[in-house]
Image 1 (tube, rainbow, N blue to C red):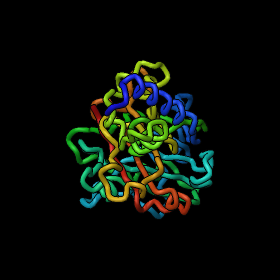
Image 2 (spheres, rainbow, N blue to C red; image 1 turned 60 degrees about the vertical axis):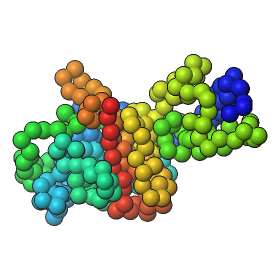
Image 3 (cartoon, rainbow, N blue to C red; image 1 turned 180 degrees about the vertical axis):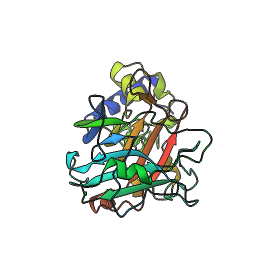
Length: 284
């Protein structure tokens, strides 16, 4: 393009600073090592709530799934999320962690369950009696130890790896350079990863990571929504679980330091309809 690289860099930095001002509420999920969580609390891993008359979810081969995460909805300080009950994420313990990357919305190797009303007469011992040992010869479950969660509301901007970033960036860049419009950052003669301006550099390298609900995601590869028809069907980050340490002896690990995401449409979330959720994870 005819626009000088100096101007391209100047405009790019200005655009990123503008995008950083457009913030959205989300919930950080902080690991809480102070106690062992009950079957009614927010947690990663461990034993989840299962009603008296219900069974642990299974895949098409009648193999039990394992609890990946459970969230106390009454503690989610976001308006579009359920206000009561328990939201659960179950996955199968195999080398793909229950994911079907060709059919990421088919709830076979994973399951999303929502219990609006919770019966507190259910006991952990009762749930454990329903639990069968894994049929896999090798364990791949990403969460090595049950850990409680604290939910904390925060704010963040659109992440660099979100599939919507390229369009948002181009729209703002073109306002600064209307005579030489771009469709995406890759149309520029500069590499975004080479930007050394501290705020932009931190945004490009660090935005989106961490355990969270709502907000914007991160990926080690690319946003899976970019490869599905009508990506806006999954405009909301329902849950993200990152790789990292739990304590000195245990960790959460998705493949080789990867990250896991669940996406849903905002209207389905408002209606507590979890029948269409996109589940994916990737790693380095």
